Length: 73
Image (cartoon, rainbow, N blue to C red; front, side):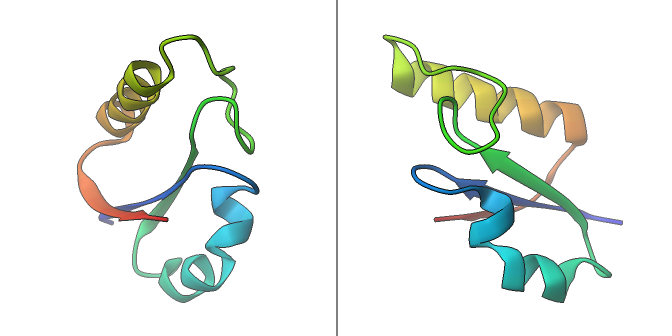
């Protein structure tokens, strides 16, 4: 099954913000929700070099799970 990534930044979580899309696509794609560092359910705290850290965090998560469709808000 192809991956689909729901990427959410500030306030809330990818899981809650994209709940309708997740419900719609859950039988067609492997769902991966990503909250940026320091937000939502991210296990990583925000740091001084936030933008660099956030980009590296997203890249790492996608490399771990494999290629797929990216949806952001």
